[in-house]
Amino acid sequence: MVILFDNYTYKNSCKSLWGFSLYLKEYKLLFDTGSNGRVLLQNMKEANIDPKEIEYIFISHFHWDHIFGIDSLLELNSNITLILPNSFCETFAEDLKTLTKEVIIINEKPQKLFRDIYTTGVLGKETPEQSLIVNDDYPKLITGCGHYGVENITKIAKWVVDNDIKMAIGGFHLFEKSEKDIQNSIEKLKKLGIQSVLPTHCTGDKAIEFFRESFGENFYSGGVCREILT
Image (spheres, rainbow, N blue to C red):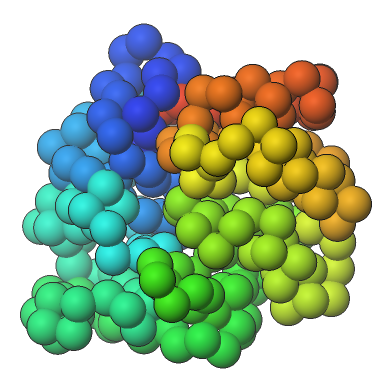
């Protein structure tokens, strides 16, 4: 998998803006679409990804920095299944049904989507958000912003697939949290079985450094065009 949109830069030839998107090539699934379609497509080109190969777009939540790349992709490839949380704008979702192969609306119930891919279901009331679980040989949790709390989401993900989640990837939404709260989150993740992390986007610089210190060689930095091989 490769990060295609992020507010951090991993490869200088890729463009960074505020937002997040990650592509799971094995599953032809794009997780979120960042905040700018032109930049998303530019980064896809740099990463040698053809927009026409994408079969699924999974949207974590209805925030501009995760959805604004949708139109640019659909202009090039309308043969896509959109997987949206039920908190997504209803009118927008109805319009998208006319522009795509299929629109699947996810509610609070976790479910298997296909192969090793699961959704946690939509979590939280203030900022409803779904996260993605990849239940492969090294189970992973991918969060857009983790508004519900990355440790809480991990606990639910572990229950959904009845398996230990070994890696957490994405935005952990800790940029406004105290050092104590960040450390508590890290300790809880480790107790839940998380072995490696890639915190980026809205995690915050301070929290990212805490994760780096705590996980050592099992810490992975984020950034646009960062490839994740685990």
